[in-house]
Image (cartoon, rainbow, N blue to C red; front, side, top):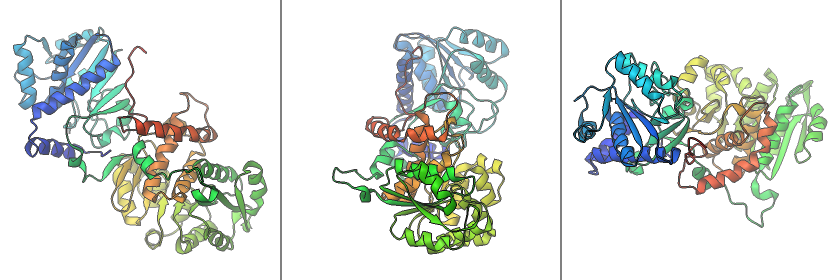
Length: 534
């Protein structure tokens, strides 16, 4: 599913109206209908709904939704931050209809009205937030800020229309103050701000509502959100007459003294991800311990130049074994030393199969001067996938971690092109970027992933998918989705470790199939909205 910036959304709106001939008032009515459908799903029995409408088309959506909700039997309290006769265009048509129909519209134009609004909030079963949408381009201040603060201080749950008011559509940042929604009905296409924090956290559960803007109008956009349906199209079928050679061979170079667990987790994840055979090339002294934990993995003992550190001869052994494999992963638990940098350089220059670099391999790359590092990555003859977390990305680029986090899609896209590599930027709202400029936002995952070892799981799963024949960029997007979904399947709470997430992989694959069959294509967060009181 394509992701549209505010500017791209305006262009899709314009083309729908001017080129395809669908009036804007019809689009607004469709937006209102999607909002009403969500309200009915949340409150099946008529109840008290407060609608807060702001200026522009988002406010117009709220005005139309208030009318339709009242027709459906709901008790509506409608409040607007726009003065009488202040609406323009399609929103003005809806406002004038309400005025001529004697529909009570309350205007919040002073602090007295704001206090009355606070009192009314206490009586509401649900608040519909239609204050600001994609057009917001400056901080929210004054009375509108007071309205948002009052909504957040109230006890009624909030359904946001398109975006939680105060969230910037493209970045997800808070423009002064923003509504904390429990649900968001995103209109037509997801916006980047719903897929990046803090916006993603303020949006709650997100559903995408169609408003008759054709998908072909977004075909040229380079950004998308990963969906279950997209992933299933990439995964090879598992036929009845398959054997272990049918699903690829993964070779993983991993482990060092005190970090054998990373090698174990990555290897186990590659198996759980569906690979037929997994080879683990590790320092020889660690192999007995690893074999005691992994009965299904074939170990490849490597000579050591220091306790637990792979020596120079290790590269030749890995390269020899790689000739019979379909994907190579390197990094989990590798020692961050010069010898590892030499090893990674040899693998990049001489390996003839797709590679996934994580953890110790990324640290090893930072030991090269910046220009040499870029030339090394660009000179690789096969596909390379880099999987840094923000700290590793900062070390690789010299950028401040905070600056990376402020613009994750642009940063990932820039360096994927510059390094001619697939880049999977981990963290809340994982981003996958291709050298061709494609961007995939990942909608799955949460705090359960914030524990040691989960990155090793992602590395093994990603290598496994590549070995099964999935193209590296698609494999990166799929691995991030499945990995996050496995974490989402854990019951809410604390106390989980990476192994708990690994155990959920089979269930995650099953859920993937179920999600792909539903009418809504946006993964686990695109579920049917349940009743408020359930």
